Length: 138
Image: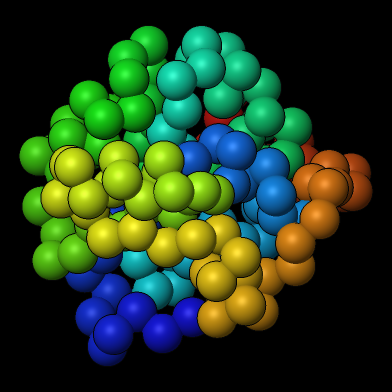
């Protein structure tokens, strides 16, 4: 995906958008190549986001915690002072939210097409011998 020539970007995925991607772990790995910070926002309880990201081996730089998505995006924007803040969502409500809090909006389908990400039911990464050496979660 073309980030406009700058990697000075914070990229936030709505949890529902992330659930539309076949390989969320690969998406995050790819996004880290052209984004400074990548994370997930959701109004779901923290454990729901944590369970999904652990199951799919997604290492996030931030997550929303127990607050609204608007408050989460505002907090992330204050905390991560990058040039651009892009919110990947799924519908008009997400687009309106992004506009309301001063983020750029990108539909997950458009993002997938631009970045060559596969849409579909998220697949859990296969177990590998080196899993015990991971340092991105307990």
